[in-house]
Image (cartoon, rainbow, N blue to C red; front, side):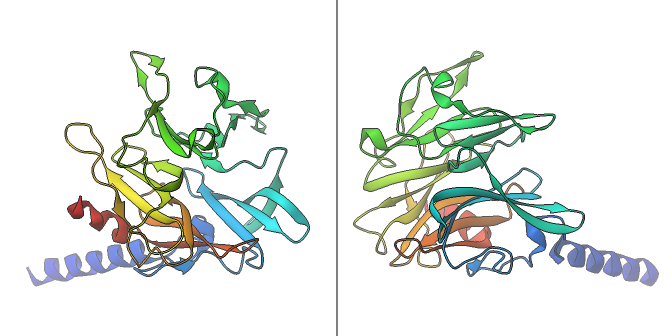
Length: 281
């Protein structure tokens, strides 16, 4: 009996160690953060300019982000991936839109444009109008669930968020999300969970902490969206927090904090600080 107990204790310890150890091939080999936001991979990402709009491939082995500043007078899109056990950064051309990789890894959305995966890499740049009833909308960020539901912003319609689902095998025309989500100023940069259980976005509201804040809404049992919940002062500050997302494995929350001009940094934190807000809806 004592031997079995000892083995169980040892196995439990090994499991905990395994869960807490960093994987050198995912999340750029970084030590996982705790409940306080930390700069993400500062030794790999050049933080002297504006680094923003983080996105991961489904296996978390490719990291996409945008940079502006220095020789990059306009936004440029970059990817960091592991090549022969080295993390290598390269520019992704020709279109530097705000990145999002679909849960199946087959499409790279770039705001109002997108690219599909081919045997040789990302294919030609296409326009999302062909996917969205041929409507010309001001899309900055488009994200998708595993079921193909799209959620995106539209700055040409006074900064609102829209959703487009697939029903009976056909894509619905984009519809406005409810008013309690589409309120405030500069409402933008949505992220929908792969299972559609929550929605994250940023907006400037009177009850916020300063500039743009990050918010979350959880899906209710009746398929409606719950209250808009401010992510709180652990995430939001007097600066502009934006472009929130949860990592593919659900463990970490990513966002960027902008200090004005060409000055912004990418942060990450244990996703527990976000998921615990579900009780406040």
